[in-house]
Image (cartoon, rainbow, N blue to C red; front, side, top):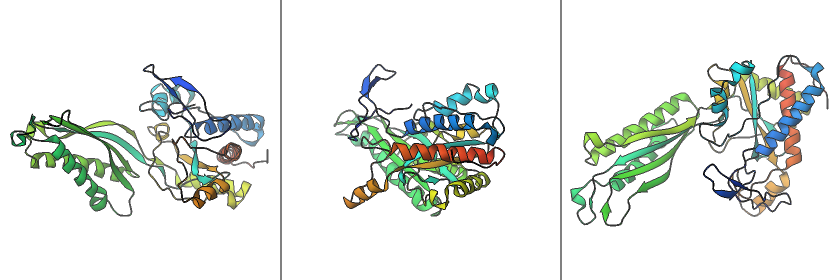
Length: 347
């Protein structure tokens, strides 16, 4: 489920050798570089245990094997658009989880606030006025204007966002020009923008547009040719319900001991499409993390002074047994706690 177009170099005996064809007919190697195989295996294990012990819970349980989490406008958004709640009923609450390479295998973690960030993908299109490279004064250079925009964007997080509020504005791509002696007619900046609140998200997008437009003005572009934004999609913030998260954390601690809960701080601002399931209508939810890396692997990379390979890396690997067991136990215990709050046996 959701293998990525990456050639695996983990060295594991079961490393992927699979080659697939994409929608454009191109063939490429694929691997499970994000742990979605752990998710599906854990979902199957959860289904088996919940079905075998119906006396421990009551209500209706819907298990969703969601595809295409990595694809824009697919996955959760596509399932909602296809009417999943209209067909099967709207849940009273929702649970989801993702395996995490930066958490010790066998541990569980749930935030009482933002679990994943809002992500906006957008382009800044910078028009220019073409000219010969030997006569730049006859044109308006979109590369120079674009470069000034890139630098000015760095001030948004540094000077406009509260230092206590997470935010990221990254320019990942700068495309412009076709020939060294030609002033082109367009530059394009491709951005990823991350935030943990609706207020910050609104601030970031407004500031990006303000900076782009006004630097275009300062660069001498006419009002009819000012830079503009093209929104390319995104996902809202994955915000856990604090009360539900507290209940789930307590259930884990009661059944598995306090040590099962990881001490964890997010180091980045990754996004998730899970919120498309929990908005419109609002469904109280908890999205939690399942540890996937052994203590020995953490220690080995630390001893070498190297960073642990991240998700989407060709070196990515997860300890499958403890990750799947934790995924199943974490989900089953949470479900039984929320569905009539009955006791959980050691299955």
